[in-house]
Image 1 (cartoon, rainbow, N blue to C red):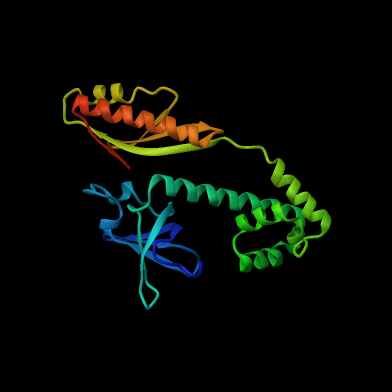
Image 2: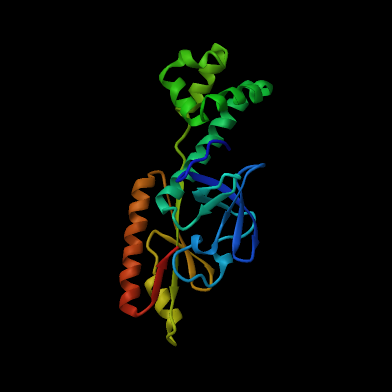
Length: 233
């Protein structure tokens, strides 16, 4: 992972937690760190509610020192940015597997050439629009097969997720939370003390995201009415 700049979004894997600092592996050679105040807004009751070792997360690059130290932020990444980054990663994997299946053993050599040119998503879009540019990397038969698979790949259903917190100090707090979370076509999953995951599956991500946001608006209004403590994770 080269040429990182301030404000870039990156996907990394939580490597370890040392006190209140989280260390994230961006690739085999590069590591970044997140201080407590950049994990999430507001008071953090339990750091491991947000980050645990081996978890894949999307971060924003805050600072890069002269020595190469990279400071990251988790809280400054929006839900939309997070979703888009993970969608891109899935698309990269899909294109990677398609090309590898078609050209076999010479894949590594071709992939290195593609990486020097840019990223695999832009490369596929380029050869879809201009097949001649793909002939530098593939035979005519390979190129036709790759483009055929790419163009006819079945649109998969995607799961849109969002995390929320709901707390109550009232004696009937559990009943109130159940009432507020009364699901419609949204799947509600309990995570840990006061934390819930909301999920919706659809072939139309924009429509699903709209439904999820509307549901969250309803939850927020109901929570306020019932005197519950509500926040979006």
